[in-house]
Length: 79
Image (cartoon, rainbow, N blue to C red; front, side, top):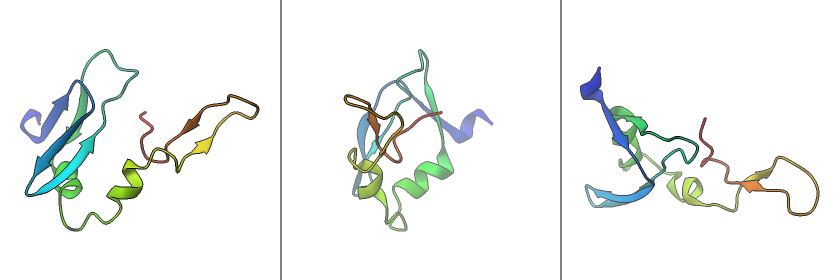
């Protein structure tokens, strides 16, 4: 249902209900990244206790070995 989704065209920081969160855009996409409203309600809720870990870009894994191999943040990987 189109009314149950939010579409963003770039990564941005948003404030809702007194909570500030970064919402990530799929950088491999030429269009919009779709977010379900229920998911965004959780992201901005007080029940979300992992936001600092989501925003941490140094907690990721290295997919390739060797010097200069990229490291990706654990939760900032898009499909």
